[in-house]
Image (cartoon, rainbow, N blue to C red; front, side, top):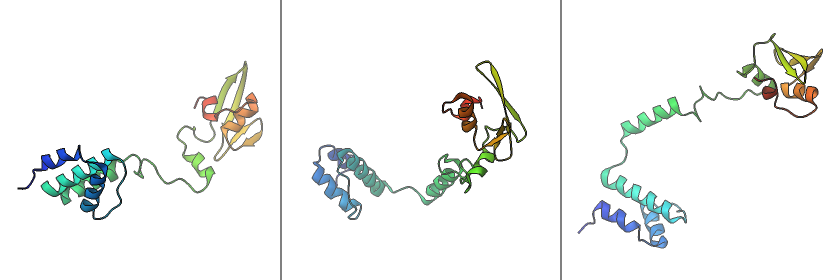
Length: 152
């Protein structure tokens, strides 16, 4: 008499880890198993259900892949484009920065400081800087995140 699927899954809860490893190797065709009991129980239970009731359909797999490509925030190229090869190009694409030619004004300790945004750099006191952080350090004498210091 064949055990029902729910009975097979229920017996996994009491099975010793060595039995779970053996069953895992049988179900996953000799693949190496983990040594964590809960993980093995869940993987085996899923595989038993997959074999007993059928796996996910081809249509569902295709739909899932389409959704992942469209909405996955980690791998979605529209949300996370490839990083530019040159650091300076990244500066152009930073959405926190105003357009080139804009003058950023900052009041600090009673004095007003002005920084001009250039195409790839910044100008402060007639001197060109690579980053806002270096200007913030020049002004304060301490390391600051330039975007935070200039409230961008």
